[in-house]
Image: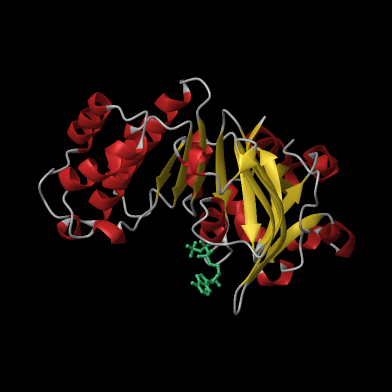
Length: 297
Ligand SMILES: Nc1ncnc2c1ncn2[C@@H]1O[C@H](COP(=O)(O)OP(=O)(O)OP(=O)(O)O)[C@@H](O)[C@H]1O
């Protein structure tokens, strides 16, 4: 069962376009949404939340149209700008937001106010970026959503709170039916908590895969320059060469490099390695948009 489905979604902007985007967010898992600056993560999330109109295609949330007001009850949306509420205090916001949700949990709200150490009577505009993010998270969590959507939730946070946030998310995943979708370029956060990864670049999905698949199939290969020729290069997604040697990203079964013995080093690739090699300029045509019917494997 999928919590979200994008079906051939197109959105054109002046210098940027998302064309024929298909993606699925599976229910009950943490899905990480990665991609370099300007690749279309926020645009995709805003379309999903119906903040931004799609030009073509369809988006389904919980099997119904993403425009259906009832589905909003089930979603906790965390983003780093609380611009609408700058002159409100947390308490003002609560009196405005809490009645909108049938599932508002006041006890949980108070628990997170304490946990996040948030002032209830200070105007939002006087809070730091990290504190605003905590406020956004507080309101998203307090109505016990089935689906949590976060756009760059850790970007304004110090390492301690980032860790705390990831722990909270992990705790929540123990709850039945919880689905989490978070966009980030801090890919190390995802190495810890994500079950699935969706990778977007220049408005196109380069891949959607399970984290297990990513961990098992991508490797960084290092060696001396003299052991690679044009044929070997073809095996790689991207190759970095210096005077002393090469470093490359490889997808597949690394045992094919066994004949090279100790002449090469094989390491598991991190998400950062994958993002780096796949989005380099010379690889700008790497991958093709995923077509309808493609599922996460
Ligand atoms: N309101 C807008 N009008 C026109 N173009 C926009 C608007 N907002 C964003 N864009 C453009 O759309 C593209 C994608 O931006 P988007 O914010 O979706 O990327 P992103 O992956 O979230 O980036 P980042 O990681 O930097 O937040 C960029 O080229 C950006 O300049």
